[in-house]
Image (cartoon, rainbow, N blue to C red):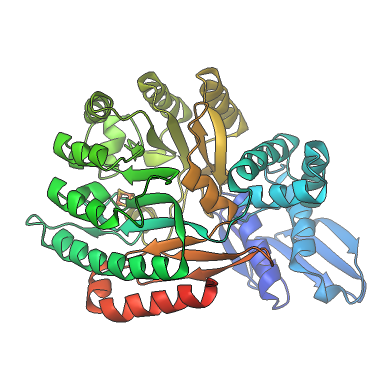
Length: 483
Ligand code: SF4
């Protein structure tokens, strides 16, 4: 089956639920609404019930009738989603590990459940399974991660915030990437221009932090590829952050040196000098053929070399990212990459499921988002392999359009959970974003809600509108964060 049609009233949230779940069940399928199709699902309501019928070539395959509080057509999308999930589960003859949950932060639900059930993990997990048809294993995982999260985020303190400094510049574009990141030029003019702009924003935020009496809890310098800066430029950046942003009470300072071709001894020496406590070196795959196919200009041997360099220079907390699904890699190739990374023994390994969004070269060329390559057995083996090597999951998030409807999980050796990552996902602490593409979140503990603060993504637009952008961001954070 390559196409399915839903015949349904014009209810945007119900349509969205049909769309997201059909995609989760049938990778890469074409989903249309209210048009002729061999495979069709009709959804209609009466006053107090909802009917779903599955057709093939106008032949009725099966139907279900669900009673609902009147008027049925105003049923909340959450309830509708559970019903359409159950119907599609029968239609495709399978269940999904995350049930009808398509949101990106299932651990947030588990966190809330734990609070609602006074910390009773069993009840919190059961409730998640009952409400969303999440598998027992995933419910337990979500609750386990929520418990870790709670140990990091409490006690809440609105004066403690985390900071993300974005450097959306890369040495070359990876083919699967839809992130707004600009490729650096040979002369380094773009990086120089961006650094100068970034310094102006840092100065403005320094004054803001002092005025609001905010303390930086964790600092994350990410990208893009921040190591695209020269050693001198990194020195300038970290020197500007020194004091307000880098201070003795900082819980964690991460710097992404993800692309090995940009990682050099002189840059690492600067990172050490400023007390960077966690670095990222991201192979994505340890298969040279795959690395070449996805547009990475390095080999697996380069990764091993730069990892050794990081160790020699004293970094004792290194994260490495892998992506399952690149270049159509079969499970055994992904497992080989994982084994190669485990052999290096980094403190963190983050395993992403490939998500090819709009804007990625790979999606434009393939014309579809992904193909189904992995099953539950693969993910089970992956988790077991990591567990056997001493890595436990510590944070998780999901993305739309991921390979096998999988998730992204950060694994860590004991004592090395990535604190910023946990805080970012928990959404119980404000995150201030500095730089192009660095959006933020302002957390209001009393109402347990947060406001997002967006900014321009592209470095050239950021440059052209720098003063206006900085003013607007400071005004937005000022409005959302109390004095
Ligand atoms: S390094 Fe990251 S941000 Fe840069 S092009 Fe590759 S995937 Fe995109």
